[in-house]
Length: 171
Image (tube, rainbow, N blue to C red; front, side, top):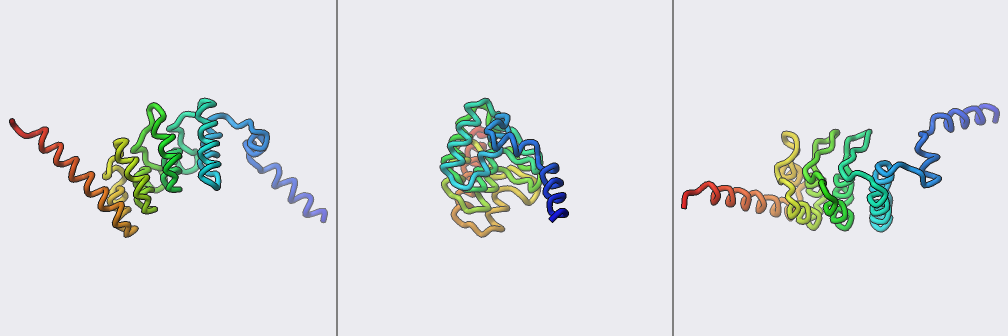
């Protein structure tokens, strides 16, 4: 019992200073956004992210542990409404890659097979070839065996190449 009391004191002392601030609703805006994208339900994520952005959170802030942006988290969840909210923010970096895996938001959408999220990201200018070697959205969709997303990415690459060919041709 005495040992347990000492252990609880050690655990409490080691707790993040942000934990108490989170309990009181006093996180800085960028931390609010980081916490928002980790909420359990899509509704909670959208509400909390909207509040964090309204409070001044910067959309491209990276989580200190893994280097993810809110957009990469939203794409990993397959959360189309949250992706739409984040893409509507000025200056959002649609092809930012997370430092740990080297995947972009589109790569995470490809890994999860989230066709609607992938379409939204492509419409916002996401590159189907962004990412580290062998970790592009096309690579990820292929390895994850998500044919719907892979077809969408291949179509985007084809259209991109066709547009480039047209702009380079002489008329």
